[in-house]
Structures are given as C-alpha cells and as structure tokens.
Length: 640
Image (cartoon, rainbow, N blue to C red; front, top):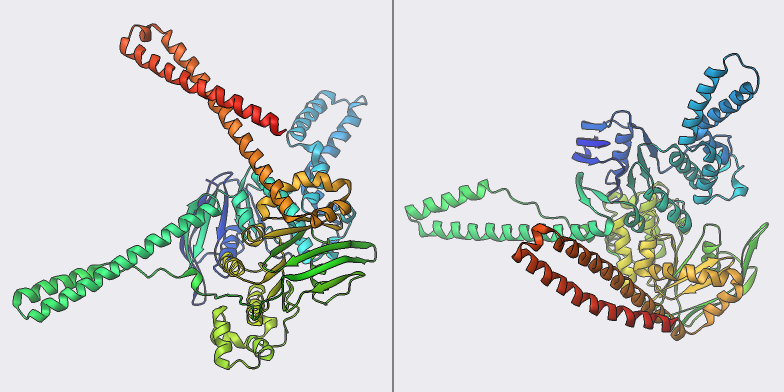
C-alpha cells in the first residue's frame, strides 16, 4: 500500500468539506476521485500532497515513496524553452552521461588510477543503461509530441505560453519524473482527442500508482480500476471503472431508497398501532403501546437518500419546428497569416440530427461555429440556414455573457417579459439561490458561468443549438443532465466537444476536421473509432476529394457498408471462439489420455469408466466443432 487516508476531516469556517473520510491506494493502482463541483476533490489532493493540513485524521505515504502533483492551473514564468524545461527533469542522467564521457577521455590516457576508474566507469554505465539513459532525449520528444506540442514549438519560452500550454508542460514534467504516486487534477483539460488517447496509453503502462480527479468518463473507463466517490463530505470506494461504478451506485441508491421507504412504512404502521392501542384506554393496551413507543425511540432512523439529479433542471424545447434542411455550407475557407485552417468545406445538416464536430486543437472547429453564427467572417464560402431555423449559441469562453451584469440581470435583460419570480425559479433550477442571483458574472466560477449560459440557451427555445465545448467546467452529474436534455431534444444540434463519453451518448453523426477538410462518419464515437483506421488510409491519399465523396455518398450506402463490416466482425469473432474451443478440447483430450495411461487410473474401474465417458463427450463436441470451423472458414473465404 502506497497511500493510506484515515478518518480525515477538513472544514473552512462552518463549511465542512470532508468528514471522517478513509480510503487507500495500492502500489501501481489507478484510481479516480470523483464528485460534483465544490465537493472537495482538489482539497483532498492538496492534503495528500502536503499543500494543505487536515483538521483531523492521518494521511500516510509509504516510506521512501515520492509524490508528484499536477494542479489544475499552473503559474509558471520560466524563461526556459518547453524542451529545455522537460529535459531538466532528466538532469541527473545528463550529468551522468557527461561523467561517462569525461571518464572515457581519461581512460584513453595513461591514468595512474586506471583500475579504479574502470571499476567506477562500469558501475556508472550499468546504472545509466538500467535507467535507459541513452533514450532520454527521444523520451522527452515523445512526451512533448504526445501532449500535442509540435517540434516548431519546442523552443518557445515557458513565460510566453497560455495557461493551458503551461499545464501541459507541467504534466510532461511529472510524467518524465515518474513519481511513485501521481496526483492528477483534471489532466485532460487543454488536451485534444489524440493527446488524451496518448495519455491514456501512457498511464495504462505507468508502473506506479495514480490518483486522478477528472470529469472525463471515457478517460476514466479506459484508465482506472477504482472509483473513490466524495459525496456530501463522505467517501465511498468502488472497484472497477466508471461504468461499473455508475451501475453499482444506481443499485446502491435503489437499495437505500427501498430500505428508507420500508422503514418509513414500518414507522407509520407502528405509530398507527400505538394510536389504536391507546384509544382502547385499557391498562394492558396502554402498556403495549408504551412498549412499542420505546421500540420506536431505539430505532436508528435512516436518512432520506438525496436526489442527485433533482437539483439542475434542463429541458430544451423548440418554440417552432424548422424545415427539414437546417444548414448548408458550401466552399467554406478560412486562414490566418501563416496559419491556413481549412478550405473548400462542404457539409449539410438536416432536422433532428445531432452532429459532433471533432478534430485536433487549432484546426478551426470553433472558427467554423463562429462563422456560422456571424461572429467571424469567412475568406470564402456560402452558408445557408433553412426555413424557420432559430439558432441558439453556446460559446466555450462565455463571451456572450456580460461580465459587469449580475446573474439576475443577465436573464432579465434578455427576457424582459419574465417576472422576478420566474427568473428566480429558472436560476434556482440551475443551482443559483438566495443572494447568489445578485453575484456579478465576473465573480462567477467557470462552472457557474456554464450553468448560466445553459439557462439562457434553454430560455431561447431555439430549434438549432450550436454548442462550443458545452461540457467544459461541468461536473459529471451536470454532464449527464445535459446529455439527457439533448437526447430528448426534438430540434437539431451541432457541437464541438473533446468529451468522448458525451459524444458517444449524444451524437448521431461525426464530422472530423482533418487535413483541412472534413471526414463524415454516420454514428457515435464508438463507431468513429471502428472506422477511423480504415478510412484514414483512404483519406491520406487524397483527403479533399475523399472527404467530398464521403459527405456526398448516400446514407443507404454507408448503412450497407456498416452492416457488412459488422457481419464480417461477427464471423471472425465466431471463428476465433471456435478455434479457441477446439484448442481447449484437444488439450483436454490429451490430458485424459495421459491420465488413462497411469496405473492408479487404469486399474480403477470406476475412474477409468468416468474418464472414458468424458473422452467420448469431448470427441463428440470436437467433431461438431471441426465441421462448424470448416463452414465458417469457407464463409470467411467467400467474403474475402
């Protein structure tokens, strides 16, 4: 065990953040700490890292083990280059290599201490090789590229970087330092899809323990094997990934509700019996009533389970129905000096579709949304919205919000016909109550601004929602509420997102902005992953023409190819399972023969009979499997 957290408590004033919390992390275990925004997840990480003392309880780190902590926000102003900053993590190995070179020069001379020098050289060389010293520079380059830095950016000074870039540099430093316990607070923020996938594989192969705070459920499903939930200050651990946790949590809540309702029913029953007994006004009846009252007084009354999703109420309802053709984009192009984004893009969206626009950072996804909304001019191209289309726009930077206004005024100024009570009710449904409504937008957190922007969007009753990173700053519960709202929405949606779980739950089509053109996928994120390797070979030859062909090809043709691929996968899986079962049975048959050859077996009539019958059963199943394998092999050959 590398980390033990025992009965820790932390409060800020009268606000208790963590109460009597306990959990542990084993060596090489990958765990996630989850909870709603403000639950205290970062507070726990800070206490483990030693940045913040616990009010009570004990946090123990295994002796001699190191901790690395990635904070959400980095304030780094080093004049070092990005590459130099990461290379400095391996300074001891670089110095070791310099020491080796100096010793090599000395050994080529007539050094009087040659024997001792050779002994030291061999010792240092062994350690250098064991620590993979020769691969230091390639390792640094690999981490930087994995985190989304191009080689042209390697020489940029740290002090000139954005906050997101500084966080990526800090993450790279930590990964290269390889601490025994890695604490990561929202590590997927500021990473594009390719970088997140790279980080997943890196952490899966990381040979030490990791504790992650993240709202990226797809990421958690890929990386972690334990979920530590922080809810109302209390901690509970669940084995498995996020999906397993969600299922177990739902079952646990159902059990808690049943227990609570059953106990409440029993209490009401006992109270009615007590009332009835007392109404008899007989000594024996009154004593029996008193006995039942004592029993009720001793009963440990269960708390009513909290309604997790009952707080934020989000429902998108279009005011009017749009035409079938919602958006048509033709020949769209945009470039900046020395930075061409995309050219000659064509795509269309029909009513009822939920289209996810994905791609690497900097490819121009947000720019496309801004152009559609008239917030930025295109270099070329034509954008046509269909009849009766009403657009509602959510921008990830919340630039449409007015920083100087209060939350209340932000709603009332846009919707002046709403009464104060109506505005308060709407804000309350997005978790803004009491004096919170008079807080200025500039004072609100990222999550609060996100909820306010969603409230405005909901009130717009638009039939075409255009969303730029709508899940940024939202906790998992809020994301699930947004997913449900979009899934039930009868209008049309176009959005940019890096949240793969969100895309998987909501998208009916994916447009990938790649090589300055668009690639079209009919399906959710899982389907995209299935097709991307196959299609990438096609698009790499002629991306623009291939993308145009993919967009213009018929829906029926795509569906047919999808079904053919699915059938082929099912056939190959069935063939593989048949081969594996044949191998198992053949091995079992050999084991039976070996047992029958043993004297203590063939002289035992009962055991010999049992094994003979078992061998006959194996032979019968094998014969059927051989025939099935032949049929499947012929079918597979015919398909090819």
